[in-house]
Figure (cartoon, helix red, strand yellow):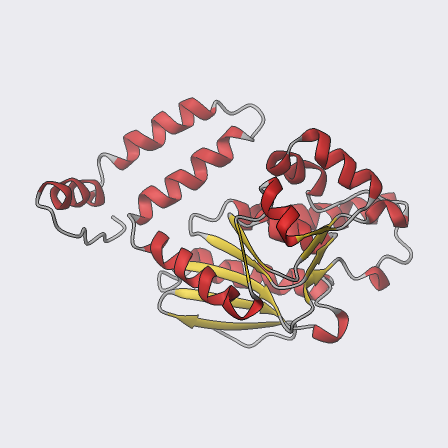
Length: 260
């Protein structure tokens, strides 16, 4: 994988660790970060050696402390919509990835950073993590999916409160609301993310991709989630992995899945 200006990447044991590398800017998401995230996602989708992904931020302070406000000058309705759409498109690629993607939130996850974390399949947080959508302080609303995914994850009432007050919440609160699934000391964050993703990668890849697609179907307008589940179940039962999984269960051994 090539080197990037704003991202660090490391592929080990099938897990691609992606680190936003703008520590001096609290890892704020500028246009280059989004562009390079898309290039990494091209690799994730196409490269069979990449089995799963962890996204985090460089340094002890921030996962990503929002979008880069310096790039907001001169926006009009047309360019503003294009900016939001590019963010939507990028984060949908994360959300819809057939391979598991975990956000390891190591500090501030604000604005676009919170939206990035919410687009990942699972969020684990360090004890110093802070989450928030402070856009109304700037006279705008979240533009990268925050008004939609926050409601999905924590419910309408609390989401509206956080979106309208611009309040930050700490890691224990995020855990209690379901925004994060685990909170650990900072030194343990990446190892926890790796342990979770390693466990996921021990399962049948086709089934994992099916779970992601079926769950996403629940939140997709015009899609019958139950119908999607039935179709995806049917697709799984004709795979080699299904035959292997059943055989391994009956033979009381560990399954050796091949993703076929």
